[in-house]
Length: 384
Image (tube, rainbow, N blue to C red; front, side):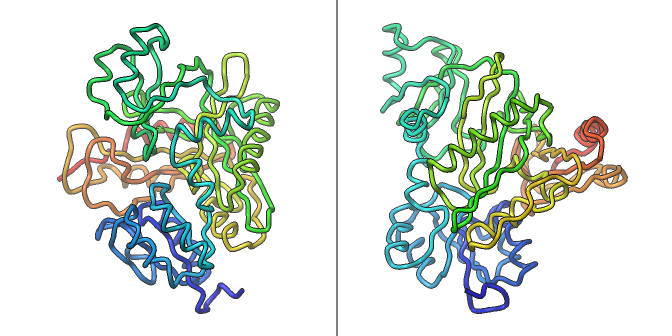
């Protein structure tokens, strides 16, 4: 099929920053795009050929959106899967496939999938209701502390909480959830795997993630990870195994723990471009967004190697600021070597909201990391 400057139509469910960065690539290749998002202010609205406002979880909205699409993809996994399955039956190519999304969309199903396929992961218990957790603690079946995760529709640190006391349960939603054993780990790692519709598969280098202690969001992504080569090899081969077992077309970001004794455990996966791959826009031969487009269109996969060391710093709203956004001291970071800010186009900031990211590239990883620290200390996302 001819995708370029033709009547081929690519649909994207979700119009946030991931969609916006995917559209950089479709515009580069003149691929016609149509985007659906809940918000009229979605960052992607300015970059696509057609923009539709509507709910990603509403069956009729998603089904009607996809009827005239050749290939349909996502930038967020919280979408109506019944509609995607119907579209797939009717001949629309849906990547990642709905059957893979069914496994991933629910954290309990995702964890059971790992157990069934002998993929190492933290021990867990599944609960239909939050109230069952209190009973389990009282009976000695569940020990504090543990990691609580909402089963359905949690992402990017939303729907995850460390529970250290019964009081910590009070503010949590009452529905289906899992309780995971807390893993004492040395590092949090991630590997992005790309798989095209012809079955070609490649991994990106292992990255290391440094998290914000309160927001449970990534503060720095460091590529390459500062780990032993044998550990990196183990992480890449485990990520490949996960991708092959799930069998999706597109990108799969596999987040992992490196334990104190260098075991690798899968934490969770995301079936789309991911925060842990943003460094690739400046640092890689083929960035993750281009690779996603190559994957879902069945085009040859690009080179996943890095040209230079890359570090990504998330720009999130400062605490105490809500309203029209201001990027304070952005000129100062633009004066630093190898620094590229990416602003997502969200007019309103609030505490910990992802508003953009900054990549720092350098041939020397240690230099890149120290510049990243300066970037973090200099730029502030505040309001007027």
